[in-house]
Length: 201
Length: 359
Image (cartoon, rainbow over all chains, first blue to last red; front, side, top):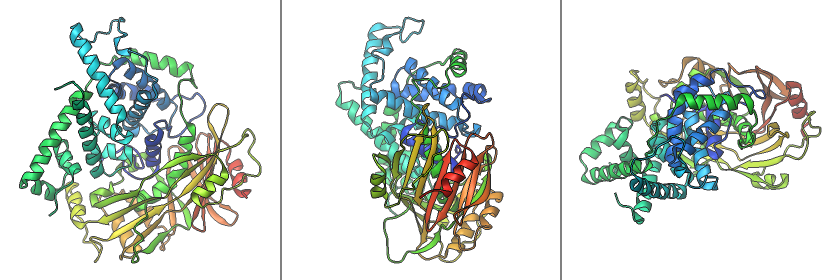
């Protein structure tokens, strides 16, 4: 199984594990602080390989590409000064992105109407009416996501971002069997919440 | 057999290879479970659609943005990194390692059934050198049975040393003289006891072994279905941070992890677990060399980043860990079933001075 590091990092043992546990608690752990200002040499390589997935994780939480890119920058900056092993980087970054994005979602640090602040060449959808409907739905999804228990929300987003059960398990310090249960609950709750609102489909 | 859990049905939707043959066979012939899979599939599809956001990340542009930031803003203000967490993570890693590598579990407690007897208690710390690769390869014990986490890690901050003592029942170590550059009052954090129960399953171990193309050795009599209970904690930490928000010094103490068995002797269980496919040979042999009474807490040390050596703290054997780049040092020892660690962005001499002077 390819877990990230911990000790399992993803799996469960050792050194990585603790880091992942810390991530699970606050999403901001840096595995091994380096000297001040030191930026790791493999940063660009890791960045280019992992950036799309990391943005994808944050975007699923926030519903906004712009905000997701901001979160990705924040997460990579932390990573740049960490000593997270390169083999664990993708998992670490995904988890950090999920936590950071959820924290943004819940702390009200979101920029108002960020989705509409286009104008800089970023296009959302060709049809204005459709765009508005989409934006409204997106808000409902994010509100529902923000009401889920933190662990459920993280498991849900990571699984839908392509992390394996083992990787999600390690990230959240769960057994792979519990990941299914946690994701299942999150999906059921999300659907219930959203169907309670007007939007169908 | 009993119906598989909702979680198992959910996993059948998108990662069926992770579901045991027995569960798959059951579901295939059980209308109730098939309906459960269908419902899980619907909810999963719905959630996937709701969460999906189309994005074509411009990696080049994003990289330019990051490289600018990384080179100019070392401690950027909008980055609320809690460095204390990373240190806390480091301090807890020995505990996590003891649990993970030896086994069995993830925590412990509860269920204090009368027939449990203690098979593993920590009296000594020994360093284990583990490379990143071997960490990645460490086996997921859920492949060898069922792991139930009874008490999950629950960390919280408390206002005073007295509150930390009350919450954990442990004495807060008093630092007499702080190293140069460390000042002010520490923040106190506590973690409750964590516990879990691992039930060994020969069937599952067999399947896992076959999946890796390995052959499982016949298990010792009585191991199949044996339960192991592990407890670790509670613990506490006093954390001093420097002005820039980096952790300057951490003094932590926790009840050492302990494993209990419902029947099979520790050595039997340990040796067999260590022989399971998936555990790298070098780690296996290192673990085998531990004290026969199992009274050793392995500390994983990523050898690319750290070095470790043995030392002594007021009569107790201790492990000193230093970063190769000199940015941190830590010393860890076990005494009377309690693990104590001192770590910080200070020199090895300074952590040893603090450790030996704890009141």
